[in-house]
Length: 339
Image (cartoon, rainbow, N blue to C red; front, side, top):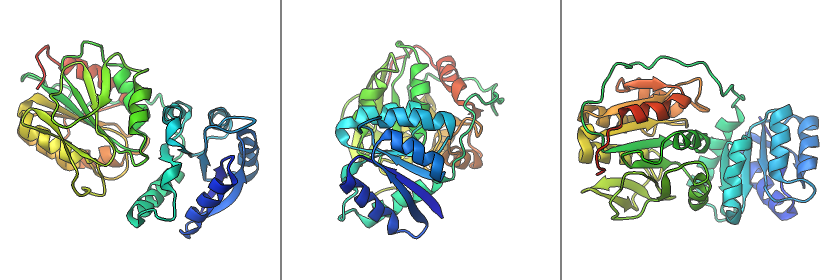
């Protein structure tokens, strides 16, 4: 049984979320709080397995409450807020939030597939024990592999825990990084624009939502929009409104496989924290095409599902702690033009 504390100043929203959880027998709502201060007290008193946290509340904000909770009694927290607070919701990553959802998706008309996917995500999040973020370095599996072909792009896959991981990678890349970085971050929250806006404060590179038929350029980071597959096609980025792949849309496998076809030996793939196996098949494709493949190590990954699945294919060249990945990308990059 997963014991849930709902934190929101709106009684209506608390009722909607309670109804949402009560539709799955593995969840039990053990308490509600109407502001951040009450959330801290009830976390002490009830010791929940999972907290849903609003951002803007009276008395004490969600961000302030998260800071105190994660300092004194670390607990898995999911932000459920309005889209207009998207930037602030991502700021909650710094305080320890593990996932983000927009309030407007929690309606009686919610698609059943989406409902089941959110349940699955929350169940996995509720089992996360807070981990050290300064894990010891591990040696890459193929530290001696040298990039002999011109690098043309970096493609990245991330899911749960990804925003904070991407923040660390993007902040470690210089403004003159010589190739485009193309990223799929699973984002069912609808906060894709907020993610881009938030990330601009943490990287010297130009970052934007990917658009159809644009040519990716060096010194830029492109983020796949919510609910569109992002691929590389004929030297351009293309957005595809197809079916989900392994329950993901956007799917990193779609991006990685297209990069393997379009760029061959000129691509590096990176699989970061997240549940599931998205990115594993794409890792195989990139390795077969002659590119270099990287996976985040277990110690630094919030959820090891995606990196582990990539590693199990036998096609990962390097396993690196998160803090080493930007430096390895810089070392592998060559001052050539982009796609």
